[in-house]
Length: 133
Length: 230
Image 1: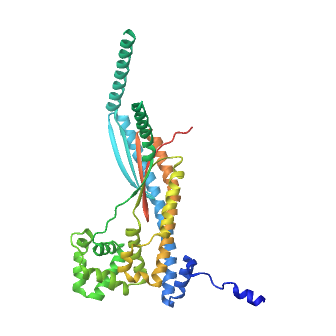
Image 2 (image 1 turned 90 degrees about the horizontal axis):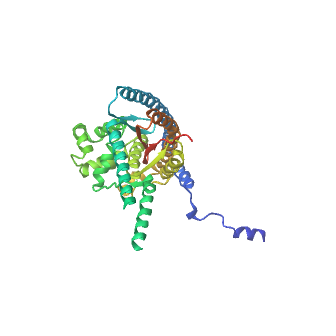
Image 3 (image 1 turned 90 degrees about the vertical axis):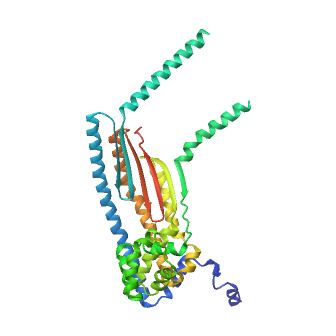
């Protein structure tokens, strides 16, 4: 009776439940010796490549940090000289590129202040007119 | 009354615009109108060493004259000035893979994955303190994409060698590799944001920074704002 019960239990899972690991295991089993060696070597090479890439990225980050420090120094020098300026720089960094724009526009900020003062005066005149009316 | 309602509606719409612009995903419109020619271009974009191996193999298989022509026309094929014909496609992507080393086939596959599986570009505005909350989920999305990405059906149909057992494993190796590269980028961003924060602090409001993170299967463009200490 116990044996009959055991027979009723499905011995294998459905084919539709095949996982990615099953597919990989199957692919590995079907390789010949040379292919197995090639695949194993490639996997190891990739680990090394990623480690090297990471180290190189860290060096790029260091170089970018130094370049950014120089950029700030140059902007400060331009500040001391006075006048308007705009600096655009692009840095190759660890993960991609950083674009920096530093600018100072005294004339633009002066115009902005003048416009704001004009607006306030206009408002005061309008309010005065409304109150008198 | 309806005028006030419309005005209120407009005001609400205007208020929501910055939130929409803060984070946006763009799907790059990669259109391959000449699939065969484009596949040849992808192969010709291999790294120098792999490309040299490819041309050496080309010479061995098709002779010195054909190899000379291929080297001469290489830059024109790559730029699109000359369109590779069916014979060129067959030579590079049907015949040569049968004699390529596994390593070289993997490099071709890597290029194909970069060309056909990438394409998501994200653009968002972040600040120097809480950037991680916005960027980490996007990187995770790109990491997941590394595992799930598949080449288009027409590419798989044309390049039958990709269906071989060893190439299935190559797919898995490259997927894992690209996922790790993306995770590494998130780790490296920590330091980059320290640099950016320092730069923005030193320029005292005069600086504007845009950082583009290039991942194997996607690009994230970040407009960085400095958050003041509270």
